[in-house]
Length: 306
Image (cartoon, rainbow, N blue to C red):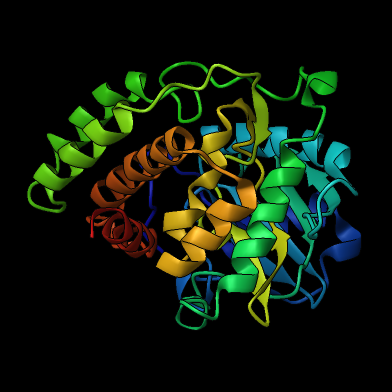
């Protein structure tokens, strides 16, 4: 399979088998099957393999994704029991080898389908319960005393999503310079200016997942059952975790979610700005790579601009 990123490691099945045999031999005899985008994996940071019926192997593609895995495996124990949904459970944390340069992990398989795979069944009015579940997760995250383990959680600096909107203007401009007709540039700039008019967050930083897009949300029966991929978690503007309003929900579900999190106008505009920046970057980066995440971000962008 062609690599997605320029600095991507080899994550082929032979590499995975070698890692299992050398570092987790008690798991090496289990069946191994790569989870492709067509099977519901729209992620771009990690390659996933189903291991037996109860486990999944997760291999970071790049050095930045490897750093995220380290953050996640350290953070998750502190979140256990604090959220109203399931979280990934670490079974084995592997280390780099001669064939693979990053840490890797075996996690417990969580039931459900990601919200992108189930998107057709989550539009209004079927996504109302999901909107309420998402609001409950965001509310619970805002109450986590993250400063007690501040050596794990990074405060989002200016220039990263969650660290304020204005410093992201340069990022928007750079992506639009490469758009070549892939996005509505005029619409993007108009929406971005509206978001910049919002009052910046001046309260205490709160813990944010940072990437509540469809592929990181597992659902069953239109209910949110698990939130995965916590490698991008950090402390910052709580509006960052309002992004699923556009990335996941329909217009009516969006309003139900907003009511659930009690977002004021400024927070809502900032959230839309964070969603816009992520969607623009995603469409422009992933479209030429023919990755399913391009469609995820294109749908988000449509929800923002329509």
